[in-house]
Length: 349
Image (cartoon, rainbow, N blue to C red; front, side):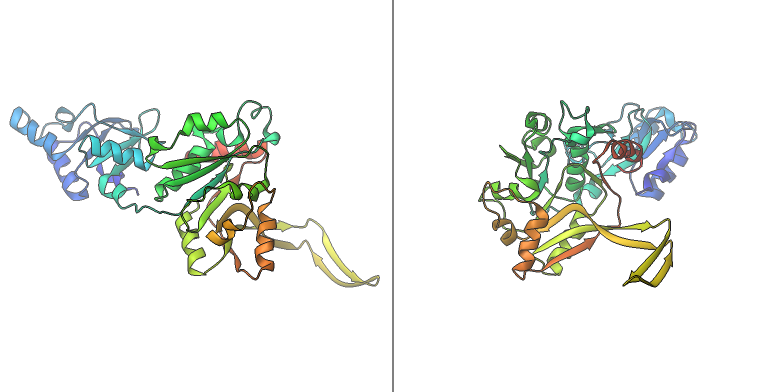
């Protein structure tokens, strides 16, 4: 949403022009910024009214009546935090700034209240050793490595929170206290976080058998904690439910072009020749939706990989489908991926 750009004012803008801008944009606020859009203050109808009742006229500069110490939020803050800040200060909107104080957005109370809660549980796998990212992971679980200003796991959970999810389960094994200390029980984000600790690694699917019995009997989103994505998880969930699937694997299409001519043959004779062909594949993104029945089929403390679980469900004549993801997705498995994430993050969140 770029509406905030319509309410940017310069310090020399007149009070009359400020009033016109506020009325036209219908956001009830204007942002006074310097030439590089660094926030100097905010102005509302109330600020203007108080200024006019004091000593200022309609042709005076808006800088004279603006609020020079407005309440703001950082761009890294969650939707829940922004809403709580507005409610606690009785505000209808909040400027969103980066670490240097430049405006990057405007959060409104009506916008944050549009978010509907999603009761479906989210299960995030965060127990791996991250050996390919050593030495960074010698003293830190891979999902807790910073990407930009916060851990990659925090980016992932914030993405879910933005979409209304609040019921989280996180599997841990390697240095679990790093994750516990950062997220706690989730109350800081106004969500619920339950930890599932694997005493011994159980594979990508085995931790499902450790989930508590009272978990909501709804389709569960399960994924790896070392993924950076802008996937709309609500759309993924809706697809799973509308197609009446037992399990859904989120996939991504990749292309591979062979640099040479490909020769096909049979019994020593050439049957076909294709010059530098391009092949397309669907790859597993490590994101799934599983039915309560699928989750319940996993026995406790049994090592199991997710692909093996899905193969079992297919052999049982259950419907296992794919969902094609076209949004940004990056599996941070190797050092090159981690460096790419650092470059990409500025334009993502």
